[in-house]
Amino acid sequence: MSSLTPSATLSDSVGKMAADRRRRNWNKAGMVLFMVLPGMILFFLFVLIPIAQSLIFSFYKWNGLGPPEIFWELKNFEQLFKHKAFHAALWHTLGFVALSLSIQLPLALGLALLVGRGELPGRRLFRMMLFVPYVFSEIITAIIWRYVLDPNSGLINVIIGSLVPGYQPIAWLGEPNVIILAIFFVLTWKYFGFYMILYMAAIQNIPGDLEDAARIDGASERQVLWNITLPMLGPTIRLTIFLAVLGSIQQFVIVWVMTQGGPVDYSETLGTYVYKYGIQRLQLGYGSSVAVTLFVITLIFSLGYQFFVLRRDYQDTR
Image (cartoon, rainbow, N blue to C red; front, top):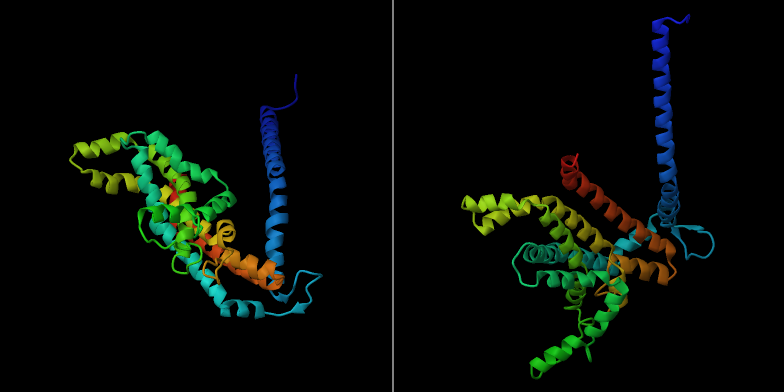
């Protein structure tokens, strides 16, 4: 007969179960660490360390050759905020943000409502055609539109000249009064298809029965749109605002390929300013101060927007 009492046997069983649970938890933790560790290493090497180095270099007068030796304290930042080209770059970037929020996103939303659920003939073809520009790379997009906007043989000037007698070709990328609008037109052509697809995906998730019930109760199409469709699109609209603002702040490739920030800084953005006055002119200390400023602006907006705006959407998904 066994000398173990029932209480001892029960205690052993509980101990084994606890040990098995701890072993499973350790195995899960080890697997998670194994899957996450490579990405964390890359994030540490190529994101956190460069950010820390940029912060250090921003306090030095350094041309990138050899170790930084001349400690300038805050002189780089003082020079930055006194530079008129930086002021122009900041205002142009904010202008892209404002135009994106007031024109690009409403246009994408309107087209999504039109081709998403409407009875527009050939809407599938329209949907494909509107999304095609987003497939092109930014460099290809910029090169194409440089030729389209050429003042001498560009397609736009040729078409307008054939329709309007006596028309004088416009240098779309050379006139200070129109260059920002011309670049924004290209940015809208490139990216509104992406936002349109996001809106269309959200529209497909809205129960059609809910809208039909509102119509049966006597609601007009405008009331259905404002009181049912748009509120249910709220999380997607708030997300696209977040992406549009960050994309406008960080825009570089299209502007640089089309104008390189010119003429005379009339199309300068924060991205082109960093490259032109930091890397091209071998003023990497000064360029680091610009990069740190851009990082701080982006970080403040990202954290603030997620905390005050997107936090409710995160809570609703739990």
